[in-house]
Image (cartoon, rainbow, N blue to C red; front, top):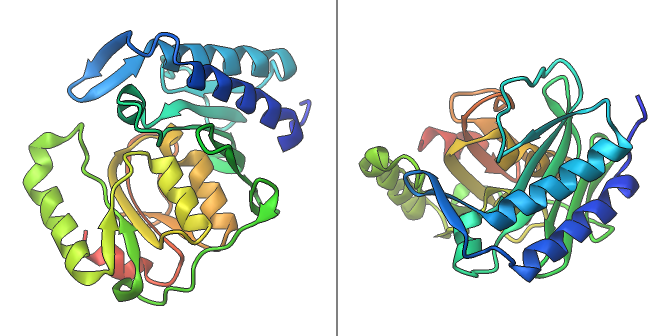
Length: 256
């Protein structure tokens, strides 16, 4: 296999960020399910990245949010892409949306990039090689307990039938932490924990493309992402995750 490295991938992702910023087709919106939207820009970004990756690495599988992924064999290397994580934000021009791309081998991310074209912030991670923001090393915060933490919470907008229980989780976290935040962009939240801007996070109903790159970046920055039910989250299906700087994971997981 022609082994990809981050220097091969970053120009592709940056160019795709320019497609996001132009917003051509942003008003062409479709609902995939209740409160789950896609725009023409999502498809344009995905097509651009997919085609560029296939030109360079035709032997590597491609998983993207906006395609049928039933043929993916996770025993073989696979790209995992969210062309716009935070599509609802993007529709509202909230400017908290990112491109998230990871290379996964044996169900474990080996490198990833999360790019925020609005701020030109490029978070990267290499398994065993550290985590970086625009090339500078990053590390998680030193918050020792949930009581010292700023925590991102998930509203699970696609699972509104579980609203009552989920808002009880949010209340428990709110009462136990410094405060809570909500970006509606899981990959960006994981990266903010990785660079110490926040300390923890939880989200139900995440998909592989939501978490693959951010999980690796946070792990390489000294933090961790686990399933609410214990162990690592799956990268071949839906998951519920708890993410922290590594100091209070079990404390936060118990509140779930």
